[in-house]
Image (cartoon, rainbow over the protein chains, first blue to last red):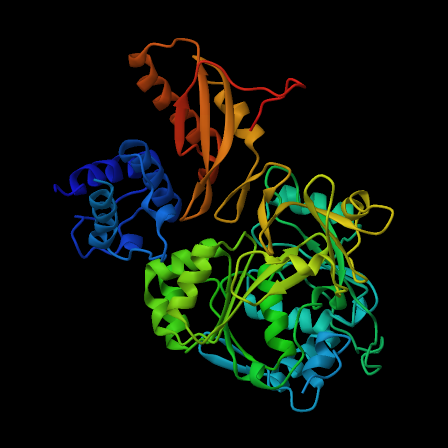
Length: 86
Length: 443
């Protein structure tokens, strides 16, 4: 199954713009989320926007709450959730 | 072994064997050293003996020294948050009937011989006046005593004195003050780093081997996401200020299996409420029937009511207290199985990461945008910051293309008029809004 990464990346850039956050640089797998320039309100906005697009919020559904630290962890929470839904 | 609480901070530091110490910028301030400096300050401020004063300083160490010196020395201390605007500050001072502000450059008191009771051990019961975190209006002033502020503070020199507390909030706010008082009264160590930027602060908490932290659930999520906190061997974890849900409690439990996890329910208005340490959301329903220091009931409106001997006093508290002495906290609760769980604020304020948003205020701004007929603003649950703002708009024109432009216009207008946490994360369109029988918008 195709990764949702490109969609999430596009919405992250859009959200950063909409929430007045300046992204600090190139986003790669190991980028630490809290250092990418988007603040916690920005991430909450992003998760809400992604829910509009994907129809799910994987953080609400998490049974064993895990909070992503890096960009790749964030994306894989979405990918894993999407693969379970199929 | 538990012992009697001292009647003021100065006395608490004077207790034989007080092991409290403050680490500030890598420098250690023992109880003795703090007391000596506070004694000198009392001499400096001798003319304020038994008079009301306000305290305002951005220097955290100076703030602590002033608190120790002034508690038991002046009649009232008004804690002016350093973040407050000049206008608000003037209004608060006027309302409190206080004209002398100590702690800053303006505190040019003339040192004198300290004759006014300097050696008397003072013995005054100082009243503390704390400003609540206001959102749209000037903060409310709440009257406390050291007794009401330390109701939930453990006075023990046992295991608690081995704890090393980190500070995440400024001392002049209720949350920060509670941590300071807990560390002082239990003889623990307190690492002051609340003024640093977030990532730097996380580094300092690890470097100083902090073992106890108190934060809102939103802040805990942020700490876990940042990651450094995993390198702290936390023994005491306190949550407060927002609803502690099952997911954050279980995340903390799995990260710190042997830590004591406590969530505190506190009302700034009524003083501290109570704490829950079984690691589950809400509190046991049996507490509603039990005789407890803080008695708990559910009101006919579904709100949590509390009654206690040591209630802070102010008009707002009196106005919300019934004939039996129960104070309506404004927090909606629900019984789920054997637990009473918190659902939110009855006032409808949205809580974004601990910051309150009044839906009406956001609606008012969105209604100013051309093309908006009506709007209702509601809370949407967010696992990251508790709640976020969601707006459902009735557009004048229902066609799809103009919708994209309208969303953009709404976002831009909100960004120009409101603080960021009040911006709507979601904007959706609807043909109409639901109203109650009384014609009020249903949120």
